[in-house]
Length: 436
Ligand code: CMX
Image (cartoon, rainbow, N blue to C red; front, side, top):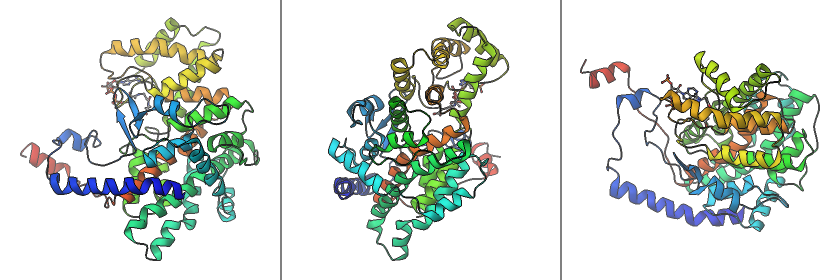
């Protein structure tokens, strides 16, 4: 952690100076016009917050500190014998703006292992939750239970100075990231397997150990698939529901446990993190309906026409911001092409990839007819035996905790204030815009 802090410290100074300069020299410079539509329709595309960890470009997709996911996957340190950039290395990159050396990445993995113990009181709380409670409810309650161990909160109570906020946020965040795979694996086993699952293995990397604890496949490639999933889902700018919630709650100086628990509740929404669960359900339904019929491009086109005619959207296709195929999808596709070409569900995913963009394009209204990450991730997980769809958002949560917490640490580092947008009654908007 000392190395991490020493890497971040100069960057914090630099960013604080840039913030001060922006406020001093350009504080009242106009960057955008606001419209009634923006105000009513979910604040879409309003540039109203600052997030340095990642940036979403309509064509490149998400970039972590300026590096596309392809670059991340190539440049980040790997597990021994592995090909996939490690997610904990991505966390280092999000925090410091630099790709860690192999030694720094190993040290971070070891630091996480040191912090992974979940206190007994929290395990007891988890063990008393109904087993049929949604896994996302279980994970957000477990994170909230751990709030009792917040070092940020303890330091705040002891009179911590403002410039120390980020270091205690980092402390809590490392504890959370270390513990969340343990919690998530426990939720999986108590909910679906009625048992404890494989024991923690500190010889593995963070994501490899999570895959090992899930225990649905002993294939080493399941660990690689999990590393890839956790690396590509880690961060997605500041305005999405989970990141923005963590930011908002954290802006009240609620500690990282409170903030993350709130963000995970947002991730549980069907319009956000739960979409991957729905995508796999659609694919399985297609598979069932087709029976023995080979899923060719033509067959899928005809099937999808019926879905559209029924007034439904095709899950896993389209995007609010992206205008090209989601690079997260492409990385997963490359993985699947390499390791599971013969899987019947992959064949279906592949047929959708060939058939649906031209079909959606022909509707003339879909801004991005290409697949997003959710159209693929479920197939890979289920290939390795992780078939319980309502667990998928938990895997997403384990990953996303890194990005939203990196954002939170940075928000404290550059002293962003409590967030308080102005809301207006519809009548006031009407008075202003319609002169009513
Ligand atoms: N199937 C059918 N129609 C679609 C479509 C799809 N996959 N994607 C968009 N459209 C339609 C919209 O419903 C809309 O139609 P109406 O004007 O009749 O309402 C029209 O095309 C224009 O929509 P858009 O501007 O292209 O898309 P939005 O920004 O409004 O919505 C999204 C984006 C993702 C919600 C939408 O594409 C969709 O519903 N996709 C399917 C669900 C899905 O995959 N969700 C996961 C998103 C993953 C992520 O956000 O990371």
